[in-house]
Image: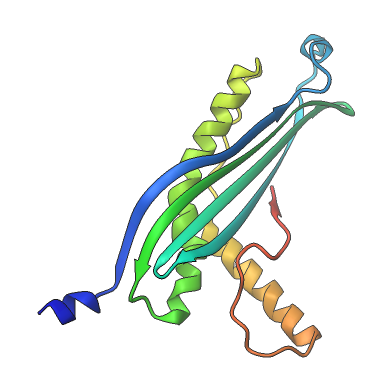
Length: 168
């Protein structure tokens, strides 16, 4: 019976943590006197790394840049990390799990930390929209496959995070 339990697929969140958070306000305090609404650019990136046998770190990075005219009001970059126990998952399902499921779990924490940081900096909160990590993963998969064809490469597995970040 224990042999059967040891071969069952296993997925567990070991820890969720804020890996990095930075804020820049290069034009404060004069930027607070501006009356125009800022334009906001959002970039999201996903990376995953194997830490040990069956233990993986997933990181979702969010970079938010707000500008009024051509002046930067603020720039926030946050990295939300998670450590996941993933065992007995078929190799062809591991990459999608790390590229879709793990970021989907981490993103609400990232969104909350960014909104809190922006508010504490004296600006109205930025509420990031939900992200379809499956669509983002499929986009990266298509880019990776196109690169493989272009470079006449072999059948290497996808490495999450080696493509350009997504911009909203």
